[in-house]
Image (cartoon, rainbow, N blue to C red; front, side, top):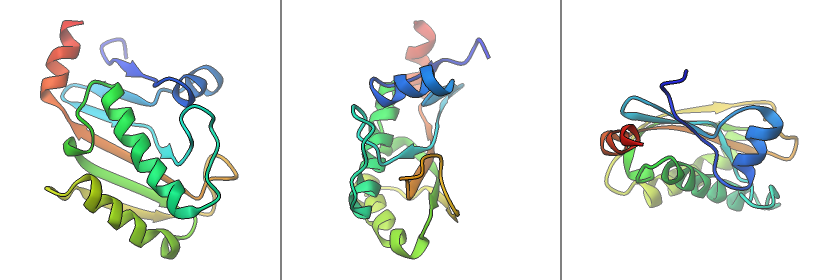
Length: 142
């Protein structure tokens, strides 16, 4: 995969790359494909005990992940997959975040209920793909 550039944002992203051998994002032609983002504080890896705050932080982590990979953020997202340990408790907050972060477009979305996620403290995780032809042209120059 030498022709695909990978990204790991400072803090949690660098930790995941070093300790778990995965990147937070990868550019594939005109797309940015993001690893699942949890509601962790990017510097401390701590989680809020409040579910709504965990979800909000995960959405913010997606924004920062996309920007770190040279994208513009949620405005370029066309595909979303969410994983929740309790869909009934998370569904409405996810929709609220969609409206906040993507007021001018609606991506495709798959909502999945799961028994558990990668860290025992996690209740929510989100994956996205973004279309970024301008950023791809810039990344190709570097």
